[in-house]
View 1: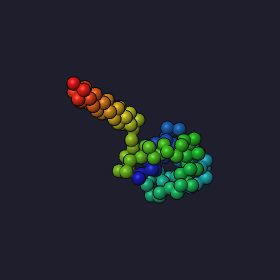
View 2: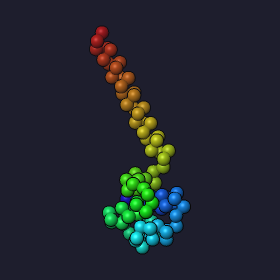
View 3: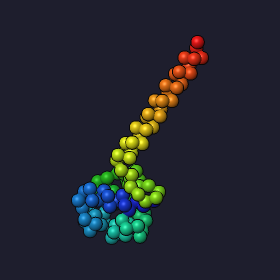
View 4: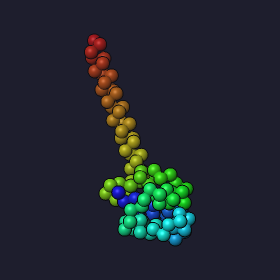
Length: 102
């Protein structure tokens, strides 16, 4: 999982330099992690999350196994697609129940 891209995305959103994040998190590894040259330990990930005032889960939610980032719109589209599928299944089930009742 390319968690470094998610860290960079959030750091950029906070308008923070990689040096500032490294200093605030107390680790010199931030640049290596963002560039995919090192995987962060849980401890480092927690420090980075705290320095960015961001829950650790955010990094995981933004990351995909192929290393690309999940955008907000993609997540919303996925949720709305799932809701739509559930609604359609509910309607089909209700139709079949009505058929059985007659």
